[in-house]
Length: 199
Image 1 (tube, rainbow, N blue to C red):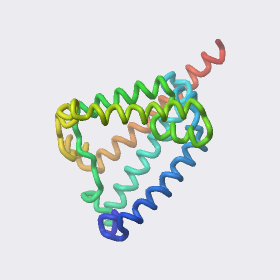
Image 2: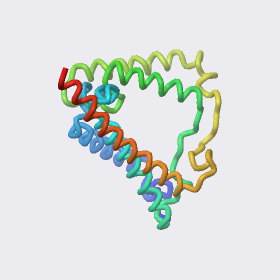
Image 3: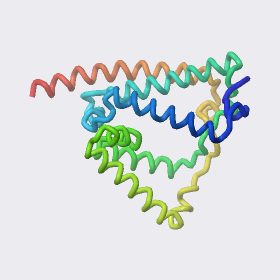
Image 4: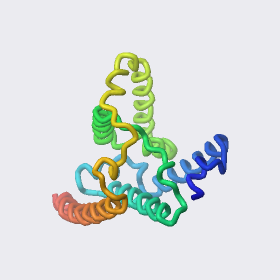
């Protein structure tokens, strides 16, 4: 095993920040090239007229999952050392709902709003200012919501552990689910997109 590089001491905190910065810039560049700096394009997925976001993000998830799985099979990556955020079920479900509502209303998620700002979009700037304001409000309210924030803890659990499945079976299931989602997205775009054009 020789990865994750940071956990095996191949570079320290300073280098990890540089690596994260470079990856972040690259990620933002490809998001913008994919049209993800446009709130209309992002919001269109909720109307099932342009499912690019689902296709790109599902592709990224499947690529990372399959890549990590085979790297672990070949003895390159120790999956036990890959960091997993602790799960606090109810707070994270609520947070996901709030993020989703904000995504539908504003047309951006936090990452894509930064991409929009970098290309000079005013709506992206307003959205990003809203995020910063929300972070400030949460910070001030944290003592009041701390109990809920750490409620329903499940620890650092993964789906293979939760469902008692071999990692490979879960990878296969997610890939199959992604292929089904891609097919459904293509069908939805053709059906709903054509109706909008006709109207």
